[in-house]
Image (cartoon, rainbow, N blue to C red; front, side, top):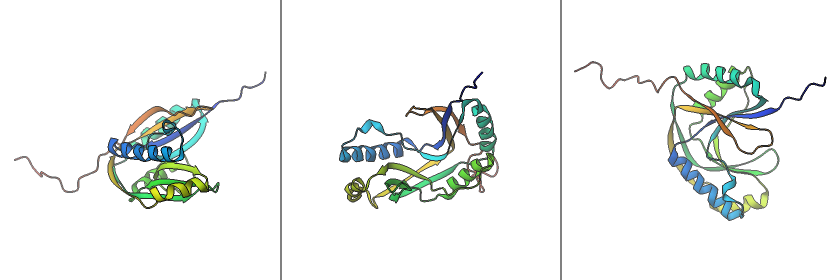
Length: 195
């Protein structure tokens, strides 16, 4: 009997910004879609990708259990952004994104996820994508509107979400949200004793 080929699912760990940042990023994505003449509904909600992998659904619970262990000792932190940047992608196309002005907490979290899965550390630049895989003419068309534009925001990061999509699907669905086990520890408590 021939063994059936297992279906792989695309899993992604993401940090979701606060509602105001999501709304502001969405506004830029609408402007980009308008300028390029594409459908404004075709883009994803603002997020910072932490990790992405494909594996069979039967490993999902193992993945969830490992992540539960990881977040138990994770402290919350604040994410700051400062401007819109651009980069050339490996395929020769371009991307516009909102930079993260203090990448270290997200880089450390990314490294913890890789370590939990016994993967080698890889280069990682946390960001919120605005437009990716732009051919040179579209990049040139958008540059006057986006390059170096100030985008100062901050939001409290106290969780990440595990998302998945089936092969052939373009929509991710939420598997689970993981809330960090520790809030930001206060080294100087406001009140040392009861009055």
